[in-house]
Image (spheres, rainbow, N blue to C red):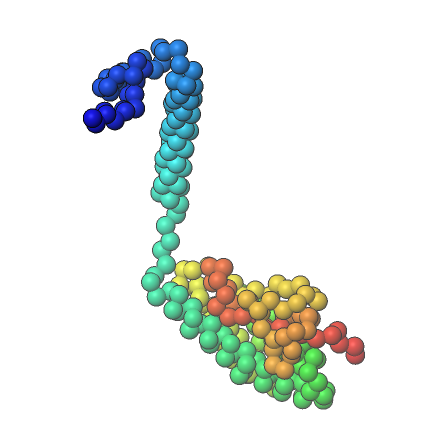
Length: 241
């Protein structure tokens, strides 16, 4: 005779049929400590969720306020009136400026040194070039007399014609830069004895890049705080006459 296989009880009372599921509310009101613990956890999670939602709403409002503030600043900021080709104009000006320094000012400094009967020693020659670029590009309206004095020559030297031509080149470059409407400057600022900063400085002629800066030979050409032509500097140990 086959015996009936035993069944595991489904609920209290060991009934052969599963007990009906009780409503969730019954768990909270039952005396079972497990359900009380679950209820506490759900309550804490709901509280934390409300706190997170409140924080999120606050952050979203701050973000909206910040965006509104930035839009207001953008509207109130004066609009630039630069022409689309202004940057290209400054690139051309920068190239001509460097050409002026290397192919006109440098030979003028050499000629002045020869006329003075001095030796063409590197640092004194570089200092003469530096004096010439300062006279030409630091002043709004350079004069032939100031250029000759910077070169160490008398005000009425025979190189007066060349000095006049240099002044015209410098003034023409400045006028072209001003016509673009973009802010620009010829920057002579430097720190004596500091390492060369390759982002905006370059050693002049045969100077070595790993030696400290001694003085500026030719200024940097900056347009709207961007480097269009690097500052040309003399590097090395201090010169002793």
